[in-house]
Image 1: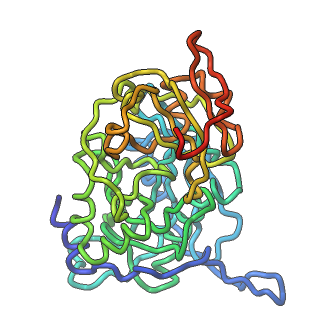
Image 2: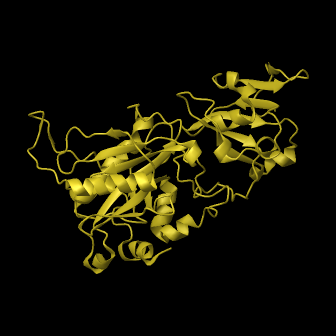
Image 3: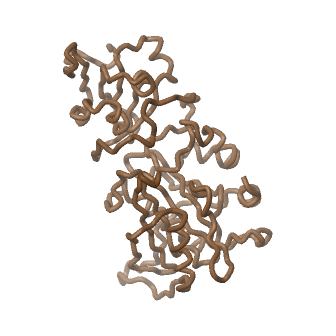
Length: 372
């Protein structure tokens, strides 16, 4: 980690912790009009430099979500589509316009050239970025919130800073705040403008409330140490996962490295629906490679959890009592392991199926939770 990153955390800490923000527009409810304003804008040569930087380090883009009303700064969002051949099987969304405003950075950090910034987030390849439903739209909303926060609050944002949402982002997740880190790429963290100013790019990483509290008390580096190294299966993935494990929940088990039969890069988008996508499967399926032999759907305490539980069918009671022998996945991931389960996944809570001797699934009419 560079001194630049460490200084963010040590010298500034969490100025923006636990604040809540709206979209930042100054709207007059009585006149239904926006107040007169003159937004801060990049110069044309600066825009060209930003665009070239984005395409060089993050990928080419043709789609831009243009902002219609810009009360203070003009914030567009560049949409870089998934490109599996280039190793980017995810969307990358990057603001363009935040850095036109010079943030109020402490004077002792002047030499670090931190006054300009742009925000980015990476989303799964099956994310419906055109959908205005909040369970899809909140990452875009939060890019704009972060872009305007320094101007609205006369502050600054940098590596290790966190901002709370005041509750879950949407009904299908418990993620409730963001942590700012360096981009997922090895290079491209800073764009130098024609006039010599640096524009720093930061990755927006959604986190849970418990994780934010831990980070506040212990710092960003200590929080990140709770995850595995970059090459481990339990590393903090830069791509948003609305049902990832909350590493700071009291009942969250300490994970061990697992060698999955299907790598993350080989998971294909096979199953999509509007319901919760989380599920639990045992290692007999995801590590040992056995097909699903028994599955049921139960009531869930978490909005992102579908309630589906998957087993190979030969797990012993002792095996199942060890929580490290199972893990949380998306339904799409388990469909990749066993596509035959897909036709049953929209069944109601209480559904249960086992694989018969001929290999076909049969409904278990006698199954009841607690009797399996």
